[in-house]
Image 1 (cartoon, rainbow, N blue to C red):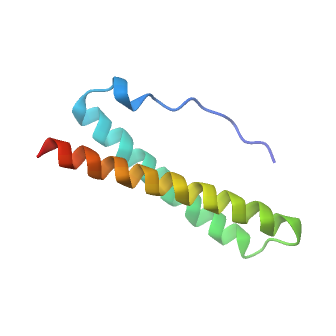
Image 2 (cartoon, rainbow, N blue to C red):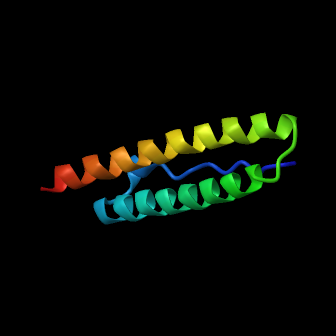
Length: 78
């Protein structure tokens, strides 16, 4: 299984409205990735169960981080 590594856009370099769009895009992508991992885990066997468990844990951490960033962004704008 090969994954491609893509440099994520540096959000700090973007304009305010672009920051919000980028954060929301990240949340949506992470949510879709989590949905796929949960689905795949249903059919995983032996060692792949551990793989998906760690992947899901990492994606959940990323998802929570992005949600916190959105909340901070919204709080600053007020």
